[in-house]
Length: 126
Image (cartoon, rainbow, N blue to C red):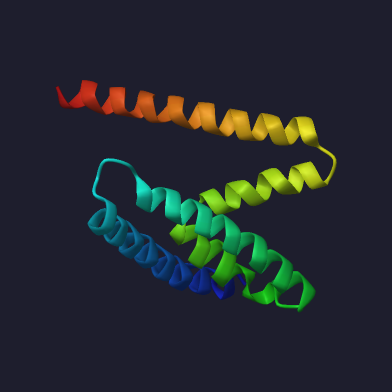
């Protein structure tokens, strides 16, 4: 049943989002606002944890914890870890061109979508 997965994902997401917030607050207090150190920190830490957890869960038969840990906690902490896992999974399956296209397309199209979203909101608000 979907609720059996949804509740752990929601609880994990709350924990991950809280950890992201605390990381950003801490990074801002330590380093200031001149560079997004908090975002860099969560992206790198989240990607490291995603890589480690994918292996540990698969090797130790813990895939039942994946919705809570991977989708929930790490998804709330940073979606960059899921993006990184998807790119490496494509590459490891021998789909190098697809992996490169995924990375390039995701980054470029996401930035363009952000710019378009900002422009749309500004046009409505002005």
